[in-house]
Length: 547
Image (cartoon, rainbow, N blue to C red; front, side, top):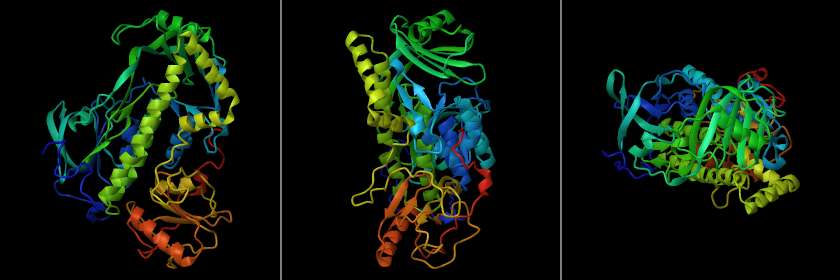
């Protein structure tokens, strides 16, 4: 069966929950439940999530098993840190990185992250390989099967699953799974195999990237400048190495043309006023930056995430962050479907929710880089005006940092939905002293109810459940610490699925029953919900991380 035309609709068979065995769907013809192709940050987070949910996961990676210490991504934004916090990983990553309360942009404009209402009111500067090391360790502990040196050749899918063919040093092999996710980057073999185009264009040629030593320490660990017909970004890794990204219309060449330190020094000096005594490069590269997005993130049983689905300019440092949030959105949905708790139609919401986010990031990062690289007199005037507006218009600056940090992302809610539906759920302290994002580490929905309601579902007087399987989809039920009367159902990825302000018992019970059936495949009689008890509170810092 052709990978592009499975014996299903493009969104897979509808409204047919998987037949669960021991809480997880199994098929004798499947070698594994999910194949993830590509062991970058997106693939590692996704694979780890699925394995922690009790699924069999195989991760195919073309490169050898060693994580490279050379990387383009170097910042982690607040929303991504919240997602990592929901997996117990954020504090460790923050401890090894460099939190910045603000980012200094071209012309002295500043993006102030300290005003964010988050446990992570900063931008974390840390290289991508540190993120990968953390996520790989978690994935291995969760039981993910790693297969490095495995170059994917293609795939076929039908109504029952996906067969992926790959080449290893030992020869040609294949694996069959219920679903496959391509997180294999800009040149995605999976995207090509399912016939998805990658429309867009190259927006910047001859971007220079180098990891270097400096003779003089910059005033700030993160600097951006545009002037003298050049643009440069200089950021510290915190270990004596610095990342330089630069561009100039005077230094245009093909990607394979070698780059020398003199070229790096010249662009940095023109953009920032000094080159800080650049020396001893461990990595120099010339590359181009594209803006591209696949029209569909799902074709049958195959999905795209991260750079395989979208790629954009490095402005704003949103690339790795957007991919990690793709993974967080998709993983719980795959786990719910394979666990028999949700119909396959739930997987359609991955496209509905994440494709608009990818499109918005393309636009915002493209706007940033175009403003930074304007060289004409009108362009420089426009950049100066944008700088002035960011400095003096608070609402505009707030919108900018909410967009870049990811905290401003919200998903579509259906007609008549509560005003909170689709919004990000902020981390809050609950009545039992736990935090919401601690509870999300269980990979389940969290139902927050008024403090005077029973510990079980508001419509169910049964005691809470104990000793559940990781793929058990009953929500954790906890209470507001405050006197708030709204009942809120939070998804495993930290977004609000449903909420109600109804106080009449019958109306509230009816609304909750509908929401639970839709989102979790359970009802308030399915053995009661799971209690809010989890790992000891002392395992998580009680104060804003890194502050």
